[in-house]
Length: 208
Image (cartoon, rainbow, N blue to C red):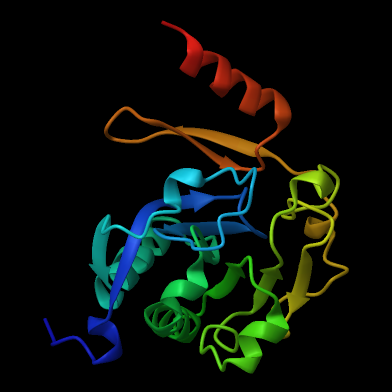
């Protein structure tokens, strides 16, 4: 095995991942949730990812290897999606991963609570490494169930490359959620957190 490149040795603080989902972006995607978010939007569906404590520390090259192995098993895998937490709090290693994923023929979709203009002003490398960017803080009072891959109406979708177009019918399809069970027996909800699903989870947490 060859030694990792300098970028490939960068470490990502990963919270969890799903190797094949259609609920976190267009097509079949490898979804990655990173640990840590200082924005902490009220009503966020992932408050357990706010704290930046070390969770699953993985190098860029190791994570890329997992992604490419998933594509070998599932040739329809279209891209990766970066969520959180807040991906732009780890934008250097994630940009390295995104560049390598794109070089391998995959697309990159990134979610952030920051605005695109803020990220470009600070020169974040993850913006130009993404094909599709969803930006803006989640605002609970503006919550929507009508816009695909968007949680509140203030959030915007930016098509940064020719990989996707706004008129792609997949962006007009209804939101959906997937329930997964991992190897530890934990149930994970992937995709849009519908009110009925959230209520069910809250009720079960209150059960003795």
